[in-house]
Length: 248
Ligand SMILES: NC(=O)c1ccc[n+]([C@@H]2O[C@H](COP(=O)([O-])OP(=O)(O)OC[C@H]3O[C@@H](n4cnc5c(N)ncnc54)[C@H](O)[C@@H]3O)[C@@H](O)[C@H]2O)c1
Image (cartoon, rainbow, N blue to C red; front, side):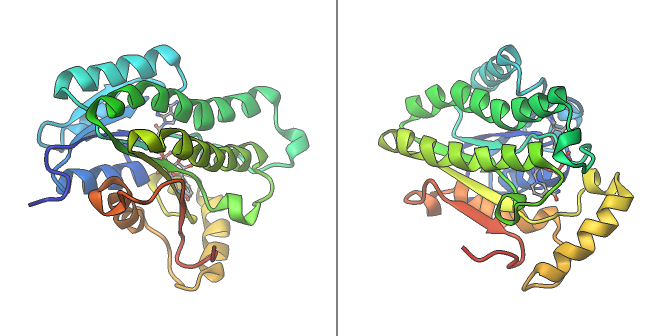
């Protein structure tokens, strides 16, 4: 029997890229999948038997609560939350002195505030079921301290802090909270920015023990483990899934 049969999973930012690969994996393991995204959620979710796609902004208190309630009323339960939505590839690398305050705030608002709001909306449902899984997508840029993306790297560091503190807070409720830190991954989003992709892509491959490009599919095994029963005694952890670029 598929390991996630009967479970209901939410994947934010799941219309494409890493989120989509994880959503595909969850559906293949038998979970009912809800994709929440600013655009394209319905089309993406149509690929799944009983899939639900909802349009909204995870950084909006109203949207996050509305989308989570819609999933709960459609399926009657929520078991898994994958916080993958973020502002990433659209960001231009620049010295931190040139980052506009509005851009700084927006990145933190979506990449951290969105995770906070989604957790806040979903946790009451996980508690009601007696447990659940939260998986937050951070980034290997945190380990390397990648320069010229200070807002982004700071936001992904915050995701790790949030993961650890929330894991302790929710442990008594049997809710596991973990993070995945992907290395530079070739996705639709990175391919839209060809010049940066060529530069960062080559550097990333060289820095790995396993010398090849990272693909969204490379994240699926760890995500399924952290969403499934095999990780019931694993919480507060950050898995570096990056072909051996960093050893923790
Ligand atoms: N691709 C990489 O190299 C890489 C490396 C490390 C971490 N990551 C992280 O992986 C995740 C997915 O990245 P990706 O490369 O697939 O990029 P992507 O841009 O394709 O994925 C992000 C998704 O989030 C959605 N989104 C953005 N803001 C949103 C909001 N406010 N509300 C709801 N949805 C929103 C986008 O529409 C998009 O579908 C991100 O968290 C990113 O930071 C990516």
